[in-house]
Image 1 (cartoon, rainbow, N blue to C red):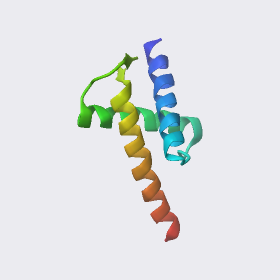
Image 2: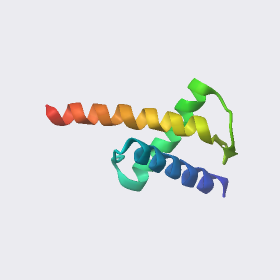
Image 3: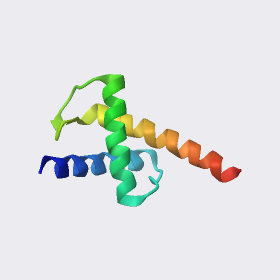
Image 4: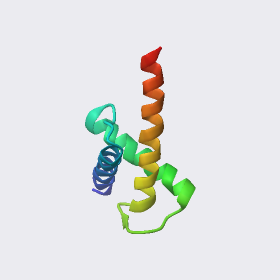
Length: 83
């Protein structure tokens, strides 16, 4: 059950990161989940674990990490489309 909650929280974090940046995460729901999980990992590496914790994810660093990930991903995809 905790794995399902982890995926749901990851999806919500990825969705929020896309909303904050005003950019769609490619891949729909799966892309949001991946962005949230990668963002949680990246945010944990950069900022550590602080703030509220849900399903093993520190929400504030995970959201900041997901924002960074979605921003970098959108830059890469924009460069690829131009070529």
